[in-house]
Picture 1 (cartoon, rainbow, N blue to C red):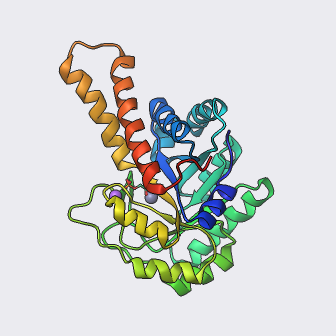
Picture 2 (cartoon, helix red, strand yellow):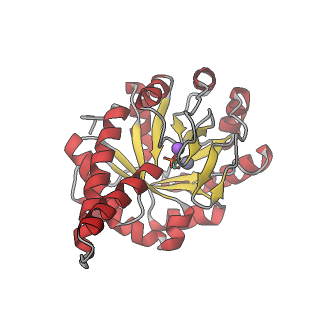
Length: 282
Ligand code: 13P
Ligand code: ZN
Ligand code: NA
């Protein structure tokens, strides 16, 4: 069933687990993530970035996710990831997305508040929850470049930001980065606990591909309720496709290699749903 993130994340916060949020880029990745959630009786969030919805319109992804969600009773969310403008957020809202992130973290604190509050106010009548980001998650998320080591979330600012905007959840910058890590990521988990003590809304971890599972679990114990995975799904899908094409270079049926990509993504998503602790929560 297609639902919003609102109750899912509040339940996760109360229960001390998180919901996995997986970036999808084609029909097979949608099917893989929903199949994984079904098999483990877990809620699941599927999300698309601005560059993904530039490749194919929001409506294509919405249609895929809606079709997958209709075939199961587990809660499925269609979320806009890193919404880059008020306009894109509104298009996602009109398309039927059930959760929206507005990412004003590249603007000044005041501008971030202004754009975030505008999206919250616009989404409120349709009860669509809004995620925003404060501080900068490093690395490159598709064509959004967070740069290197860009500013951790300051707990007192998080309090002010949450109060001024009325957001439903907050993405925090505590040392994770989008993409593949060069070394081992160093996470400021003390800061995470301070943010959690300071604000009551559910917190979101970005840049999780490449973060060791034990570190992710530690973050969940300290208040993370949504965990974003993107890069590793791309890698899993591409590895599956390559496996078939290198073994059988004459393959011309996209179903043959896409099915293998789909299987690899499903295995990956299942393992991360376990890490999130949401097995059996649907
Ligand atoms: P990774 O690509 O590092 O998994 O980051 C995912 C993310 O934060 C999506 O918003
Ligand atoms: Zn992100
Ligand atoms: Na990462």
